Image 1 (cartoon, rainbow, N blue to C red):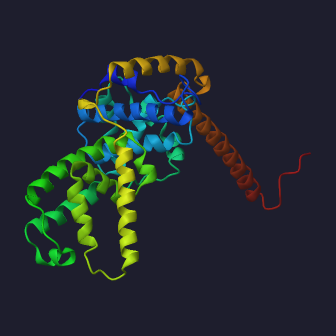
Image 2: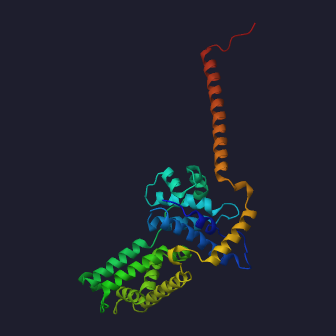
Image 3: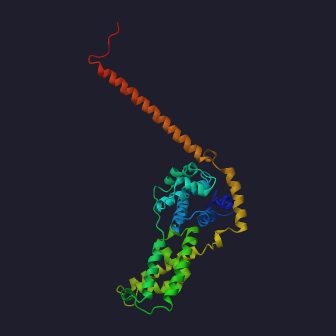
Length: 327
C-alpha cells in the first residue's frame, strides 16, 4: 500500500481566505473543499484497502472540521490523516496505528495523532455519521421483492410493475452507489438533506422512472388523507429533485483525477496559503510534544508537593506532644 504523494501535495488545498481570484467565500469554499475530498477519495481508491463507509466518514469529518476552523491555522494535509484514522475507528475497521502510518508513507504515528484533539474538538465529539448506503441497500432489496412478485409487498403499492424491473434495479443500484461514493462526498448534500433523501436522489440519477414508480407504491390511489397525502408526495419529490440538482453540480473525473487546469489553480493557491499560514501551528507534532511535556512537568511538581506534605504530616503525627523543644 502506498500513498499517492504527488497527487496529494497538489490537491490537498482548501479555502485560504475570504476571497480568491475574485470569487466569493462560498464559491471558493465549495471548490477547494471539493479538491480535498478528491484527494481523500483518490487515496482511498488507490492506496488503502478500505470501504466506502470509511472513506465517506473521513470526508465528512474534514468538512465538519473546516466549518469552524481556518485553513490558515491548520493544514488539510495534516488533518486528513487523522480524519481517515478516526474514520477507521468509527466504522469498526481495525488498523494498527504503525501499519496505518506506514501505508500513508513518510508519516509517523506522531504525525497521525498530532491533531487528534483538534479534530475531536472540531467535530464537537460527534463521531457518528449517518450515510445513505444502508438506505440504498434496503430500497433495492424491497424493489427486488417486488420484482419477485412478493404479494405482501405488492399489496402496499398497487399498479403495474415496470418491465425488466430486476435488471433495472441491479443497474440502478450500481450507478446510485457510485454517485453516493463520489458526487455525494464532493458536494454539500450531507448538510442539506437526510440520508434517505440523498439515497433517493442518487437512485433518481440512475433511473428516475424507477424512483417515481417506487414512490408511487408508497402513495397508491385511494390512500386515506386525500389532499394531504398528495401534498406530501409532491413535497417529497420536490425535495429529492433539489438534492438531484445539487449532486449534479459536480461531475467527477474517471479515477478521481483532477483536470490540469484545476491542478494548476490548486498549486497557485497552495503557494499563497504557505505565505499566510499561522507560524505557531506549522508543526503540530512539536506542539503536541511540548504540551505533553508541559503537562508531565506540572504533574511531577504536583506529585512532589503532595509527597512533601505527606512527609511533614507523618513526622508531626509521630510526635505525640509536638516537636522537640530546641535548647
